[in-house]
Amino acid sequence: MNKIDQAYKTIGEVVKILNLKSKSGQKIPTHTIRFWEKEFKQIKPKIFSGRRRYYDKKNVELLKKIKFLLKEQGMTINGVKKILNSSNTNNLDEILNKTIRTDNLRNKINNISAIIKDLKKLK
Image (cartoon, rainbow, N blue to C red; front, side, top):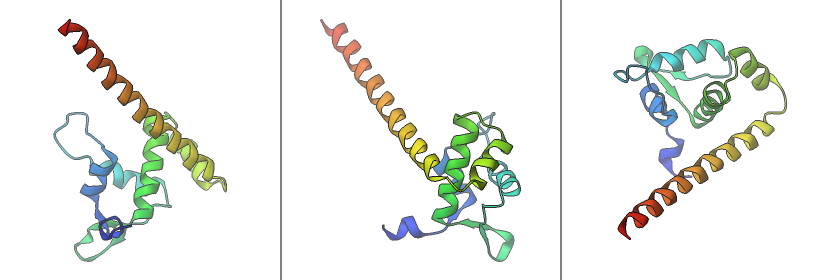
């Protein structure tokens, strides 16, 4: 693990890591992260002078899980709370990793399909 992975991230950096977007696309939706902080007590950023939030790797990973469950699995906040409060979050890690691998594979298949279509056009 390199030093960059261990460094604290600002709320803006976390939004970019999570790839959160506002509906209008104009602003970085930091309000989403602050809302999740209020809802999920497990998220505990370091707050230093100037009331700026800094997130360690553990908090960023937790936010990734929350985003996955809410945005990609369509769960409710209460449903996510139940999962995070349960003792068996290892299954969640496994599901998340499989979903990420599936998404990567799907993207590769789409890229290969596009290349095949382009090659057929050249004939």
